[in-house]
Image 1 (cartoon, rainbow, N blue to C red):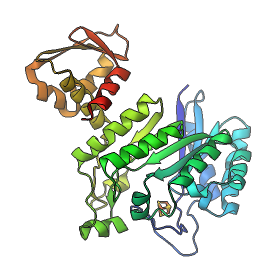
Image 2 (image 1 turned 180 degrees about the horizontal axis):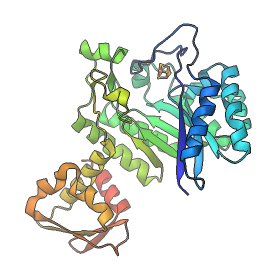
Image 3 (image 1 turned 60 degrees about the vertical axis):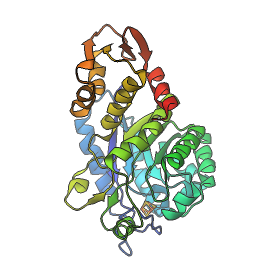
Image 4 (image 1 turned 135 degrees about the vertical axis):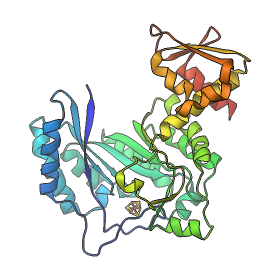
Length: 342
Ligand code: SF4
């Protein structure tokens, strides 16, 4: 059955933290800008539009849900509760910081039908966390992840490759440790320099160099590959190109692209064909795989030129790409990429 999120963006104006990449607007005395009546209106609006026969979750995004005032958290959850009880909504998902997870909080979330908790982990390297001013040590993430899972919630983890102090190796090591926490899903957000952030100042003072688009793709490729090989659902790669982000002067630097994941897929198949090392490449696969093999803006096709021929065979398993009559599964392709260390 198809799954839909009903997104509710909560701005956490009262956040006491100063993560260098975040441009939250701090407005004294205002905890959040979403009223319960807004939540009700958004849910009703979506219920009108979404197919009856689908899984629907209310998703509190954009803030540290468990960091807002407990009373407000409970009011929000209680607003969704009748929809869950009547079966119109199947659950609630929310995002928060790993250091805002404790038994009291999880008891409350469980009571109101929360199904998924996404932790903004960003990095598991002490140096990166400290330079990014996240305000918690790496070791608490393991405890928070274990606690979320022990309550039976689905665990999501968000990572941000390319933060200050990071490197290809450091970010890959974070991904390797994340795999050990056995999350159900991950989001990979390569670091962007957004206006009105400390990172913008660091960038302008030449204290921070963001990843270029090309380096961002190279950085994310092994991380994405590792997660997929470990059967972790990758629900997003690259920030959603919202209208806000697309406005002039908002993204100052970093690997911002509306189809970032497709760029990584292009590199996966381009690298795979290069690794095979054949002079001529005769590829046969299902038509649904063609765009990845040809690549964004035909990048792979243009690279290999007439050395590469691609044939469509829709009787083939989607998971298989045949090259010069040898069949490779998606897992074999990804393993080759990881082993090659490209
Ligand atoms: S990223 Fe989250 S925790 Fe950090 S400053 Fe922004 S709202 Fe606060």
